[in-house]
Length: 97
Image (cartoon, rainbow, N blue to C red; front, side):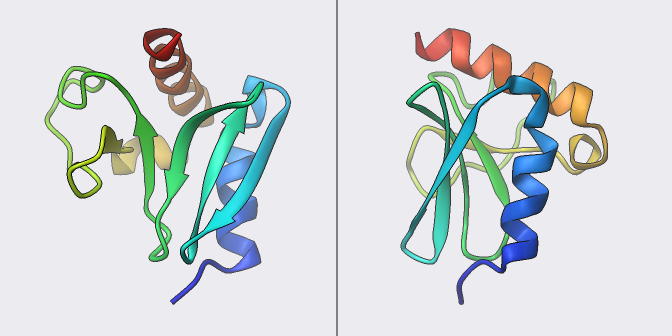
């Protein structure tokens, strides 16, 4: 299964307030980049994950990790809240710097 154009557009729209974003399809999913830094991925099933050094500490409650990689699932309530999703992405990006 691979992502649809609609799935990709949703992710780009959700994080649009971060500024210049680029995407790259990989293994049926895609990576999202901000200023050349991978900060999120979207798995082939459409689920969004943020890259972080502390997968449990990024959100108030524990979320699923993407396999054993340093990515944690974006909570469902943030998927309808671009402002909060972008705030979480900014926190993740600062931790990656």
